[in-house]
Length: 494
Image (cartoon, rainbow, N blue to C red; front, top):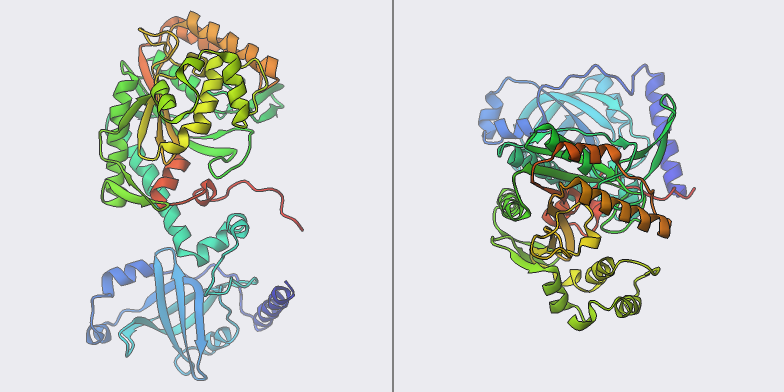
């Protein structure tokens, strides 16, 4: 820490010395002619002789990542968002002001170089620098180059530094951008319309989660950050949009883990006159195409395990999975007292009074999920755990729903939508009673959504995909914090 303070003082002193010489250390007058990536794309194939014939001058800018002075000359590297290039600076070949700046440079400074391209004796494409301009002085030193940023908390808290010194981090977020673009293009190519729905809602519907609460002064009313966009997207089905989707930010006032962040990204899409069976096929097509796009194949490694995205994927009912991987006997599934005791044995914090189906779902999450490594659809969930899904016609105790699991994690949740307003009201009322009894969340019924259903919503299917978890899989990232640029953290200790 003391060393860092001393380096900070030294850099401040250099900055002040330049100011006293009349040199601006934060100008905005330098204009680049090319990005570094463009230089390599257009000129890396040229020989030393061809480069010598070029009469072009190049203006490049970036962060100084290496600087070696050899008395009468210096070599350095700058990097921008597209790449890194070497510069050669002879003291007798640059302007006096550039020489003064060169003697005051530090690793991390943002600089502009003007000069011509050539190749060194080792064949490296290099800029023969004729002019240097300091564009921004870096007062804090970057992490030691051979080790980079190794402390995980610092990586998350100071992502801007992590992006500078860790190429792997930058690649993760470039891949994330490609994935989101792919998902958007995949749906729009199939006739889905992208929409935006409220992030502040008078009633936090669409998921059973504890919401964040705020207050709107002008309207004199409480509002909630959305836990899901579902009920608004279904209103659009009522209004006549047959295919809609939203890539949205959701907020849930709950715990943090390697799979959970209080602010996260979801893709939700809805289609009229479709069922959850249609969406299983759509999801297989979406994810297998994504694998081809990002991984150039249907099999790839995630955390040391080979995942195979080749369709069709495994499909199990909820009870089939429970029978295959759970230790609770089939004849005990209807015994609420036995299910409660068994959950307690597993360490599940049942409070008492939970519906049987919800207890079985929590046991499923504890015992079954870790075994679902390859892409697997789980169907026919208990109705108590699915207040917005359509009842199954042949078995009214379950709903027409699936969850997709990959590497033991829920990646997607979909169902044939409940569009019977009376059934929906009854289930919402039951949900409110449970919440009030357990003092969880808020006990509110979205009357406007029920009114919308009373106008008639076409039969439909809907699906939500956890974008952050999907990115984890396709970037081989163990934690959700690795794929969120600025994950939420506890206050920093001073």
